[in-house]
Structure formats: structure tokens, C-alpha cells
Amino acid sequence: MRVTRLIVAAGGGGDAVAAAMLDTALYGDEGPAVVLTYAWDRLLIDPVPGPRGPADFTGLRRLTTSVQAVPGDASPVAPAGSTLPRLAAELPQTFALIDPHHGAEGITRQLEELVQHLAPESIDLLDVGGDILAKGDEPTLRSPLADALALAAACQVNAPVRLLVAGPGLDGELPADDLRDRLGAAVLTFTPDHVQPVSSVLEWHPSEATAMLAATARGVRGLCEVRDAGLPVPLTDEGPTVHEVDLDDALNRNQLARALLATETLDEAEQRSREICGYSEIDYERNKASWLGSRPERMLDPERTLLQLDQFEDEARVRGVSHTTFRRITEALGLNGKQRQDLRALLLSSRPEQYAAPLWRIPAYA
Image (tube, rainbow, N blue to C red; front, side):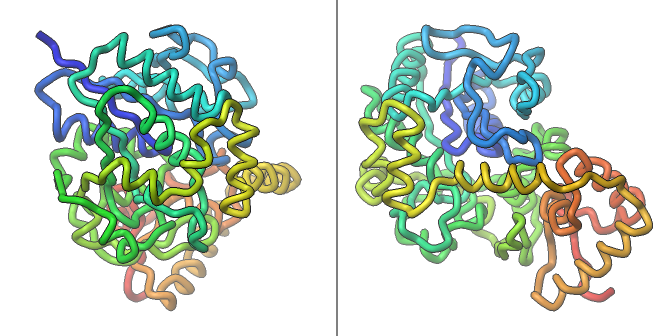
């Protein structure tokens, strides 16, 4: 009899790819899992701020009253974008859509319906990086809302949920040193074999945290610079590890998640984030989208781009950086999301020796 597993990708985006890696590593012989995830991509992919709901797609497939799957032939409604249909087309897992527009109570309802519908053998709540273990007032915290909503919902489901943190510190928000005493036992260390099933996805998916998770599983070590702010993230032997964490301890620590427990709308959840964290990351996305929309588009000039890359790498070397992501290079060079794949193709064709899949290696010397 086929065993059903449910994995909740706490932050959406790259957490869904990491969920597929986890599924292969832990449950590979039991059939592909159902991955419940947000459609919440960076502005490089989705120029519309915030998460997408079912109304933002065509071609969804209903699983329960409140939950719809995103099949490979689904499409986001323009101008929105989403990585989920392509993930569904390339990976064997079923990707179901978290709709946060009804707050934590709505996500709890979705989880309960899935549990009743699937009767899963296990439920894992997976976060890459560990910002789900934040208190909410840490100065390095950047995007706590999705994780806190997922945590608040998982704690209210009438079924056992195991919280797993992969790649401590790899999201560039909470340093691994700050997380160490919050982590339980390691349940898994990813290897190159675990990365192989998602290797084609990593060639195009923009997630930086999951890219670093995969890179460390493949043995890459050093200091990686990420995001538009150029955050430095160490790539260490801790990078490919997955740790179990007590779910109640995480909720007791996470002030934002506790404040979200009874929320019924996304607007209400945003307001709780402003009160506790001092900001809402969707406000940041709104401001950035407005700024990006006001910039004139320019064609990618290969010669100019490579000169700009040389300057970026020279400055990065001074900062002690050994690796970076294609997203970081795209934004550092002032390019837009539509040009990211063109930039990647240019770099791989002109300097293939610097590709430390799926990261970009910065040589120690020019």
C-alpha cells in the first residue's frame, strides 16, 4: 500500500524545492509526498508584491474544499508570476497551494482538511535557514511572516507535526551560531545523491537559501554573498544538515507566530508583523516593486556586463567573499528579473570554470 507523506514548506519559494530533497532523502521508497507551499516568489520572478492565492492561477486542481493543487499545466494570471507550475512539471511531488489570505486560521483549516483527506503517515514542517526559530525582534530578520503563519497554523492542527530546520543560517537572517542552542538532534545530512533529483530545478530556480543548501551538500565551502543587500553567509559543514526542533518551543519563542494564531486575514497578519517586528516584508516588496517599476529597462550588453562583473568580483574579494548567487549578481549589476537567465547563460558560456553548481565562484585572485 502506498504511504502518503505531507511536507509543509514553511517559507514557500525555495523551501518547496528543499521539501522535494527531503522527500527523496527520507521517504524516497514510499512514493512522492504532497508538498503544501506558498506561491510567494521574489520580485525577480513575480513582480506583484505578496503571496498569490487561488484566484491568481488558472488550471488549478481541487484537493479539498480549501486546498488546490498546482499542476504542471497551471498558469499564473498576468502580471503575476510563479515558480510552482514549473516545479510541478519537473518534480514528482504534488504541490498544493497555501492560501494565507485568511490568516493563520485559514491555513489551519487547509491543513486539517488535507490531513483528513490524505491521512498522511507523517507531517513535516520544513524551514530552510531557521528564521522560523526567531523571536521577532532580531535586527537581522528580514522575512518572518510566511514562516510565522505556517508555524501558528501547524501548532493548531489536531495531528502530530514535526518541525525540521535545514541549513541553519543559510537564509542570511539568523546566524547559525545564534541558532545552535535552539536546534535538536540532526536527523539527516544532505548528500550529492539527495540533490541530484532537483539538480535541473536548481539551474533556473531563484532561491538562494536552497541553492546554498544544495551547494554545501555537494561539498562547497566558503563565504557566499546573497540578496540585494549583499549579506554574507558562511558555507560550512553545518550547511547540509537537517535538525528536528520541538514545535511548542518554537511557538513559545516566536512572538509573531503567537500573535498570528487567531488572525483571519492577511492584512491582520501584516499588522501584527508591523507591531512586533517593526515592519511587514510585503510593505518592503511594495516599495521595491514601485522602485523597480520606475527604472528604465536596458538591453544586456555582454561586454559591459562582464566588465561590471569584474568590478563586482574585485570588490567582493576585498570582503572575503568566495561565492555568490546569480540573483545577487543580477541585482548588483542593476539588471532585472527578466535578464537573470540571460546573465546566467552569458556567465556560464564565458567563464564556465567559475560555476560551483548552483552558485557562482569568485576566484581568490583576478
